[in-house]
Length: 145
Image 1 (cartoon, rainbow, N blue to C red):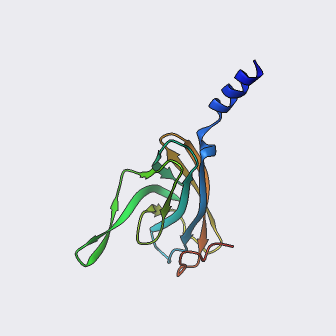
Image 2 (spheres, rainbow, N blue to C red):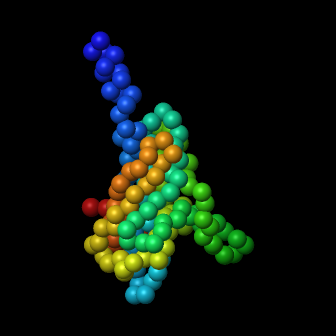
């Protein structure tokens, strides 16, 4: 009986324990800027693929999932319908690639700020995290301690 209860408890554990968010960061915004980009790494420890469906933050009117694509000699940002996260794998949001676009930022992002972020996954549900705001000229790795 105890074994059955243990199995039921494990099966009922939230899937979000399978999703880990690492190294969330954003650059400080210039005065008057209305958009900001967010970067992070999503790790999926589950044996089942997942999908980041959407995101939100109280710091912005909306948060969109974007990718950067090359159109001739010009790089353009394009909104996509989420990101596939492989089973037992990771997906990295980084400058020049996939990223979160914070649209109509409600106040300037300043170096040292922490921006709350809620990510919504198809399987794992909601996962709360934050973006550490680095300097305006920050590059990947600058936000790590």
